[in-house]
Structure formats: structure tokens, C-alpha cells
Length: 331
Image 1 (cartoon, rainbow, N blue to C red):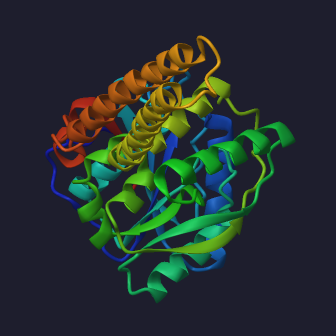
Image 2 (tube, helix red, strand yellow; image 1 turned 180 degrees about the vertical axis):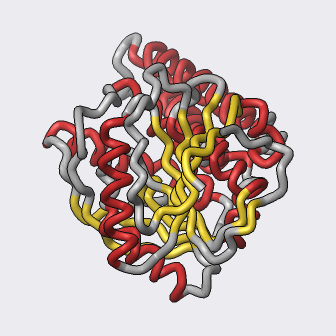
């Protein structure tokens, strides 16, 4: 069953909606949905489910045909025209929910099970405690990945703090109340990275400590290149801040090169300490540094200015271009 994008928001004001982006990870998703249903039933929380199919090449088949759910109500698949990646699938899903589904709040989580379903009621309760006015993020206190991954992730977090001044503490796992969703879908940076966009746009938010679980099925399809691209996407949201910090660094390089060149000339002309040929070599090297500093300064100025020209993508306006169909599996 397909739903039209022009339809009015469905009246589900008393329910929570769980949004899960998925790319070919149907076996894990099936296990996750069953676990979610048991958890929500135990805590007497009624939820609907929206799966964002990020251009999967493997059809879901019968993997989602399970009719004995107790707490899950409506289940829909939002199929995208092409694969866009995890973050952009989330952006389109959130924009679709804001436009077409009325709910108390949206729970965003991954399909692989590493976002523990057992933590969902805690996130929801925290959101309720905050009066449904703050985004609640799951803060990772312990990770389950390999040592190599944790080493590179630690290096990434250090670089992120140096360039942006902001610590990396959260992923996608979160609860977004309706009031915050209406604000978030007009944040253009949502197209690049959901969590970074929430922090950059200064949304009211809070954190709750969680532990990352193990995958429910199979292995992660994210390779090293994908992880690097994901990290760069997060940092791109702070392009203006990074540009300013690097501009300051370039200015320091320029002043250091000028001071060094002037000092070398003074020493060469006013003292007998000069070694034949050293002043020329030193000034030449410093001039190269000066030229590099000036070029970098111009580059970072353009980065800062380009970040203030607006974005070509606005989630609430442009999401529909990427939606192929909406399939309802359960009412």
C-alpha cells in the first residue's frame, strides 16, 4: 500500500515514532523490530515505525512480515530513489515525518542493533521529564569495536575538538520531540550530519549515558573510507568555525615568516655572526612560508564566506525529490 506525499499528517498525537534508516540490512532489522516490540510492550509504550529504505538493492521480501506485534502500530517503509548514505536518509526521513506524521516525538536509531532497544524507554522517559522540549541524545560511555577502530576514533575526536572546539560524544541514537523537529527540518546542515546539525543550530538538548551493543546479525558494511567520509561530513557542518581557526593559524604563520625574514636581514647587515649564504637561504624559505600563509588565508576566507551564502538543500523543502514511494505494511 502506498501513501501520497501530499496527504495530511496522520493523527497519532499520543504515540512515539521510531525512525530507522536501512541499507540492505534487513535480517538485523527484523531482529531489532522484534526486540523493540518486546521492550515497548514491557514498558507499555505505544509506537509507530518508519523505515527509511536508503535505496537498498536487496528487497525486504518476507523479512518484515510479522503480524503478532503487541506495541508497534503503524509500520511504513519510505523508499528513496537512490542510495544517499545514512545521514541524508535520516534527514529525508525527519523531513517526511514533520510534514506527514503527527506524533509526540521521533526516536532515531540504527538498524544493526548497536543502538540497544533496551535504552529506548530511558530516552523516551528523559524526553518526557524535559517536558518534550529537548532533544535527548544517547552518550556513548563504552564502545564494543576493535582496538584499531577505537585508536582511529580517538584521533578523530581529538582533531574534531582542535578544529571545532566541540567534543564528539553522540551518534544518531536520540529522541526528537515534535517542537524540536519543526525547528530542525529548516537547518540546512542536517543534509550532512544529523547530530552535528542539532548541536550547530543550538537546539535545546541533553544527554543520557548508554553503552553501545553488538550487531544483531552480519558484519558492518562501513569500510575505512566510509568512516572517514562520515567524520568529514560531521566536521563540514562546522565549516565556518574551522575556517576561522585555520585563518588564525595562517595569520600566525604569516607573521612568523615576516618576523623571521626581518630578523635574518638585521642579523646579516648589523652583525658579524652571519655565515656566508645562510641569510639568502633563510629568507628564501621564509618567503615560501609567507606565500603559503597568504594563500591559505585567502582560501579559508573563501571557506568562511561560502558558508554564509546559504545552502542549496533545505530538508523541509527538498526532501520529496528523493522519495520514490511510501509503503504501509501495517495499520
